[in-house]
Image (tube, rainbow, N blue to C red):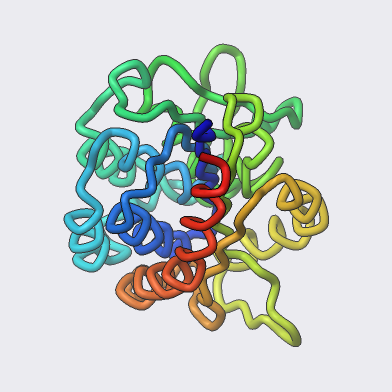
Length: 258
């Protein structure tokens, strides 16, 4: 019996563009993905994939973008950036679909900052869900929805492997772009400070979640800033290389379960 395959795509800012390279390799090797779950950048790439976006097109788009296409500064009250530009990009790459219109079942993870609880979207407005999931606290304005104030899903878990279990996945591939480097990890701006603070707080909890995955792909994106979208090509190539290193293991494991 062929097992249902789930793909978990983790948070990571610009580093999360490595997910595109991973998906390119999975597609090229005809690995059928039955469920996708993502947080933050993982939600963005996961939503594009679930909506049927071509990963080669997405790679070209990512390499053509810079911070001015994504970041729209506002008067800081609850966030430095409005997020309207990012929201328009989400609409573009998902063809403005709803969850019910997706090719692959998708779960998008956000955090209700007022209760500290995880919020998992699997129906309704896809753009709203992804925009909420990528709302790094203090950077992007949070999203007010159904009496909740929603921020980045990475706050409660950067890699939603357990969500895939709940969806029915029997074989899980997890892509983690945040393996913690040894030694010092230099930060240079407020975005990096906030993102690294979230990483430190969440790192131990993520290890438990990773144990639920059958295959873990860890693109080598050390030395690349979470805010440096100019290095998209390097991130995507790191994702491709990491997936290629695991593809035989994935194929063999899936053949054994057939």
